[in-house]
Length: 75
Image 1 (tube, rainbow, N blue to C red):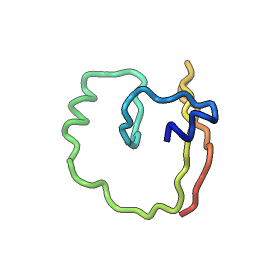
Image 2: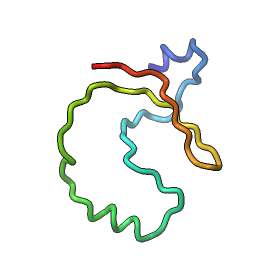
Image 3: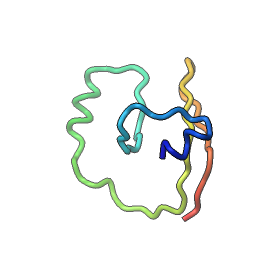
Image 4: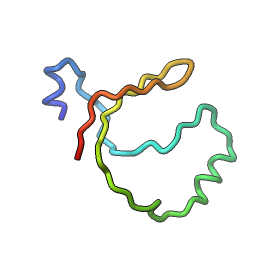
């Protein structure tokens, strides 16, 4: 992917790619959060139909994250 994006002005990523889905963000850590996450069941959350995928841009600001849709692909 870097080979395609670099000519468009995107710098080559130095970190290894780790696919993920962000379920929540925590602005300020509290030790009790760790215990709550550790006792969550390790089983699927359920099933759902994906009708589109959005590529989003996340910009971190002092007032919080600002999200912008860059492109949406209907499936």
